[in-house]
Length: 375
Image (cartoon, rainbow, N blue to C red):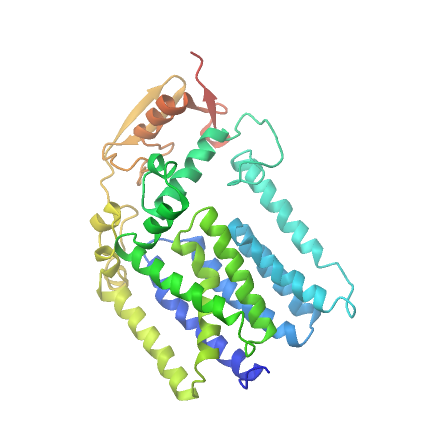
């Protein structure tokens, strides 16, 4: 027997639940991020999926496909969302056998591969496999593995050298008891995963919502294997949490409106007056960071970089670049004239991987390449 909470109730209050994202999106006030678009588009995509599950609409299905492809284009880790598109197509396959919507997917796949080939030479970057191009600007696999390794290590709160020596149990412990805000969020995430898993075996949960939860749990498994950073879970975690809340508590119209206003008010307070994120993190850069709140931005626009723009001009072989004097951050270039790269990064690549960075042509507009240093 299904829940007595009807579909109109779910759709109506799920729409209003979009405001839950406000608290998360406020954290990106000081710096633009593609995560914001992924969070919002994923929430809308789930809404369209729930609508289409009960009523076929070809135009809405094309929009669903378009949103899904756009999200994956922004963040390839969200590729499991395409399962929802396929589920809708299979559900109505006997009625609508048109496959023209697949052209949207092929278009975005071509754009994704084309972008990666131009930028890195690796067709499926950040994955280490795909079409082999052997272009002169191709990112060496050793460098790609290095980036992937430090990303994964950061998620577990350990160093890249230590993570290779840890077993699955030790990694799980490190992830769950991560210090600062990330550790708190990881515990909340684990609770949400358990609640979602329990809902799979509850007869009251409608099939469409079960599909969303299944995709979310698959997404969780993939992230735990690759890089379980909390921000990667958010796109599917928030919709799943809102749907779970609607199923657990049949709230009145006034209660829902009160919760929405509360989320907005708390989000504005955090963004405008507090530096909460600095006190709940173990990231040295964030702790030292200025409190870039909405109020500061309204009174006086913040500079492009919080660090001094002092730099030195470095000439190495045929490469000339500007390196910051304040070079505590390996990738930091701050607001320097182009071409800009941290001298520490150049030295690191040469010493660790015997790779130097060189221009592709006479002008920096032609790009750069990694060159293997000959012993």
